[in-house]
Length: 160
Image (cartoon, rainbow, N blue to C red):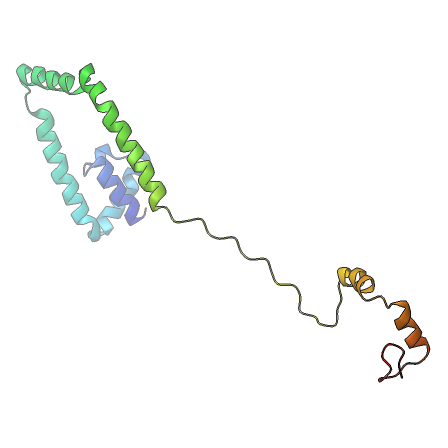
C-alpha cells in the first residue's frame, strides 16, 4: 500500500472502512494506522461522510420535487422557431468574421529556401563547358595556318 493509493481510497470511498474495496481494506487500515501523515485526509473524509449522511437523511417535500422537475423541463425546452431563425444570420456573420480574421492574422507562408550554390572548384569543368568551349573557340583556317607556321608573339594576321 502506498500513501497515494491510501489517499485515493479515502477520497473515493470515505473514512468508513466498511465501504472500502474488500481486497484492499485490511492493507489500507494497517497502513493508515502506521501513517500519521494521512490523518488529515481521513478527518476530511469523515467530515464529508457526515455531511453526505445528513443530506441523504433529510426529508424531501413533494412540492420541492415537483418544482425541481418543472425547472428541469423548462430549461431543456428548445427556443421558439422565430428566435432560432433570427440568430442564423448573426451566427453566419460571426463565422465568416472569425474565418476572415484567422486568414488575415495568420503568418505568411515561409519563402522557399534558395537552391544551394554550385560547388566552388575552379579546376573542374562541367560537361556543359566541354561541349560549348570547342564550338565557340574553334580556330579559323587562318589561325590554324599561323599555328602551323610557328607564328610567334608579334605575328598577327600572317604579317611579320
